[in-house]
Length: 259
Image 1 (cartoon, rainbow, N blue to C red):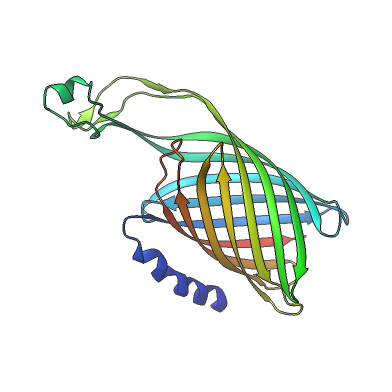
Image 2: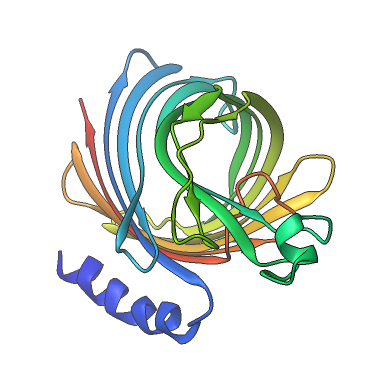
């Protein structure tokens, strides 16, 4: 635990420097079962916060399967159930009556709905993994991801102009989204060393570059079955108008059990 604590103390000041960006925490638990030399199954749960850790952002549970095609190539598939805390804000346009009458300006927040709702996410991946230059391991993962957000109706929304709820139903239509995620990672994997540091960069593409994630972390092997991990991540949002996410700094801690 001391190594994980030291790592967190090193990266927390980095997150604190960016006052305009959001900051959150991520906690995860994972169980992994090796079925054979080639096959393994995993079950993972996750909890995430946002708004400088003041708001619960997401609960998630995922099931995955890996198949080792060769010594250096692995195929994976998975499903994740996401339960998200959504915040949908609409903004005034120049043609709105309130703007024409001078009660609001174009671009001002108009109405807000905050609600919990599910998403369903499926993915398939290919990962190339090989040791190069001594104890340095390089990996490239290409992942196709499809996320479906079912339609959801809220009973009312908050009106910024009236400073009250409007009492009108609003339905957000269901929506599906395909994303190609490309991740390049390097780690220092020395035999006999309990701690494995790593760093990676991941690109999210959906007809255009939408996000870039930069991650640095450590995995600490406590025993054959138990391990702890900690990471710092910076997510730079480029062109993702689906979720209106801000740039985000994230500190994560995870526990993994193999049986």
